[in-house]
Length: 129
Image 1 (cartoon, one colour):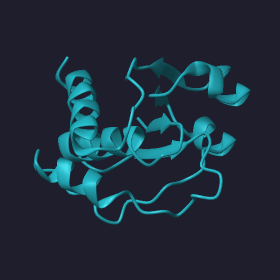
Image 2 (image 1 turned 60 degrees about the vertical axis):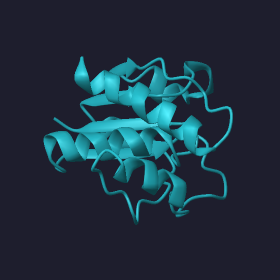
Image 3 (image 1 turned 90 degrees about the vertical axis):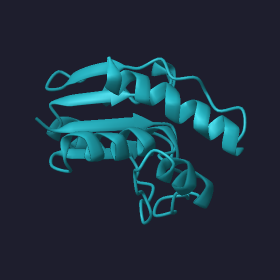
């Protein structure tokens, strides 16, 4: 099964979910991307995000933002969306080949450490259930 985690810009929520999946299930058949990377493609995740993930024993140094493509969606058997459905492209919301699941993850108010921890912990709950 190929799992794809999607959020708005692929710099926080989908990167957290990707890293937790990798750590929990192994790194095969998993990827992450953003629906609106706009000029940030290839950007590294923040040092603060790396730090809060290290707190739970997960290393994400070197992770970079990627733009979501129709090919990524068609190649996935499961797509987990961590952003509002309204901002997703039609090829994602209408995907027939993939099981599209929406996780209700709060939007970040800021990228302060406590806010990042709150988001991380919210996503961890989905892996625990």
